[in-house]
Image (cartoon, rainbow over the protein chains, first blue to last red):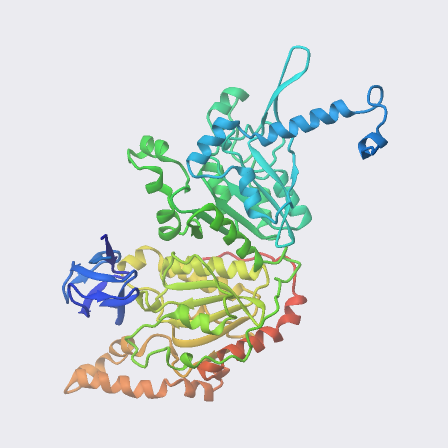
Length: 73
Length: 536
């Protein structure tokens, strides 16, 4: 089993985490939502897999390119 | 007994025939095909790279290569004048065809002196040279297969003097950009002149992991600045393509890289005096996708997939995205509508709501210039809240580079068709239409526009009114609601401020009709574009 990092595409704040640690998601599924420029930008687990851990919590500020979750595949 | 053609036409070998010379010619050709010799070729292959001859073969129609200057090189001779060996010139070039259309193609041979040219003699190519002259004179596309590290200080020793920059310059390379399509593929480590040559192109591509491009490589950087970086960190595709947009696209390997080059050229005319090639289209021009009706969410806070929207409108499988990983606030693609080539510029609401930053502006400027040069109509799918705001954006000169995008759009003479699907605000919005010409702009019912979004403007414009209200927050919302009612796109359509509002499902039929209608005008406005004015 290997892991990969999911990064925020944009600077903003974590509005909602819509998955849980241990949850399995399909490729391309939304795992959390970043609020940026008054928009809700989905953060996507490109290759799907199981959510290993979150690196941020709701309300936290994130920078563009920051790792927000680790997925296991 | 049968006699060969050779024997019939040249019966007298000994006295007047030229068989000995023809034998030498064939030997010299074989020597040229050995490139830098088996050891150098094997080292090159071990690095996961193809030789220049394999690259040319991988790119072009099978058997179409007509090499030019194959005998060029440095011969070594016995005292009696007999040829011992020839080291080929480190550049292979000639004429070929791609999908049946002629091109000029050339590239450095890395297995000979790392592709470093001696620059003393007439040049075959690399930076100007015969291959570029052919492309220019024959009005055919040029493909550069770049794999060279540029000048070497050893040439000073050989020549006895240093070369003034520009003596073997970029004049022809620059002139080509206004006349024929120029493609550059960076297939090894390109620094200095070859790196610069890669940039002087309409479209460029490099191979992920095995090619790098920079003004100067790691040793020079370490001496100059003390920065210790390997060449992948300094000029690999992550930096050069995804981050800096120095090179447009990347490919996983050389084979895929050649496929991308052929694909790019399939959208290009041979030169600016021809129209881009139209192809038969079996995708109905009036195809109406139901999903277009609700792709833009009513909730303005929710972004959507603009690439999917564009795919549903264009001819099936016709989209070729330029700079897909750079300047993410914008999506630029070559595509087809009813078989005719168009350039599509679409804002990407997934990235900062589609606000135009410096990278997106750079991407838009180059793409508009590319399409304008080759008479490719532009189609905008607009959802732009304006220029990117904030201190970082101002420091990056977003205003100046953004206005350059406006300048490029207003200078373009190709037809511009604008479909406003969401926001169209401010100066970034201006860069998406030709307001005074006959170029069409239509809107979806989800469109909204103005000089700035109402939410952002109310607090500033009605400051006193809001401050004096008993409940300032409620008053601000009230003013917003009043303005929003008047801001409906239908009110603008009543005033003929927008040509039409369409059902999103009608978009493809609408655009196909316009693109078909404009073909005669495109045919009578061919030729090079004059350059005038000073861009901001």
